[in-house]
Length: 310
View 1: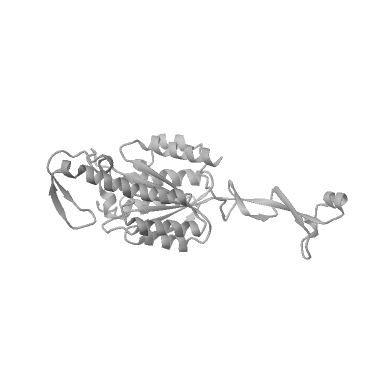
View 2 (view 1 turned 90 degrees about the vertical axis):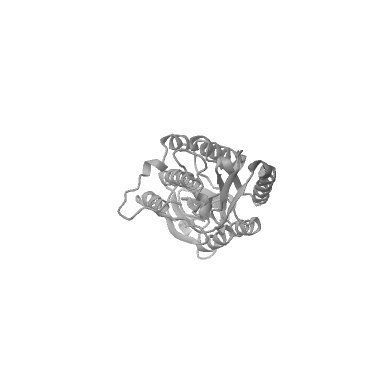
C-alpha cells in the first residue's frame, strides 16, 4: 500500500466525498434494525423510558415515584394511580470499522490506480458525513492484524475531518484478522451501536463468523460491506501472469485459464458461506464492486435497507 500522509501534508478530502453520493443518501436515514442507545438528543428513539417529550405508555405507580407524573385523568376513570412514561429521543451511534490490511491495496487495472482501500475510505467518508449531518455520532476503527486506531463516536464539528485524516494516513502492510478485531470491537463499544464493517472479507470464514456472532450477542446492529475489485469477481486474465501475494510473501507464474474455474468456485463458496451466516444472524452482507460508481451501489443498498425496516 502506498505510504501514508505526513503530518504536514494536506488531505484532499474531496477525492473521498462524491457530491453525487451525498445527494442520493442525504435523504436516507441511516437507520439501525435495532433500537439504539445514544448520549444526546437526536433523531432516533431510545430503548429507555424516561420523562421526555413523546408519550409512550402508562405503568402502575410505585412508592417513590414523583407524583407530578401521575395521570390524574386515568385516576378519575379507574381510581388507580398510573405514571405516564415517555420515550426519550436519542442519536444513533455509528461505528465504522475499516480494513487497512495489505490485501486492500489491490487496485486491479484501474487508471488512475484506485485501490479497494480508496473505495473503502470513500464509503466511510460518505456514511460518516451523512450520519453527522443527521445529528448522529460517528466513530472509526482502522485495523489490519489488529486495531491500529480507534476514534470514539462523537458528533463534534471536527469529527469528520479527524476520521478522514486517520484513514488517509493509515499504511496497511499486515495480514488481516477480522474475527479478532470484531471480538475486540464487541468488547470496546459499551453502548449499542450500528457497526459498519468495510472489508474485502479475505480471512478465515469461521473466525470471521465467530466475530460477527459476538457483536450480535452484544446486541449491536451490523452491516458488512464487502469491497472487491472487479478482477477478483471475474478473474478476467487471459495471458500467462505472475501473481504476487499481498499478505503472503510469494509469487506464482501461472496460466490463468487453467485456474479460473477453481478460483471462482473457491471465492464464491467463501463469500456465500459468510453471507449465509450473516443472514441467519440478521446482518446485512452486501458485495460492492469497485468498478460500479459509488453513487449507484451505496444509495441503492441504503434505500433497500430503509424499505425493509420501514
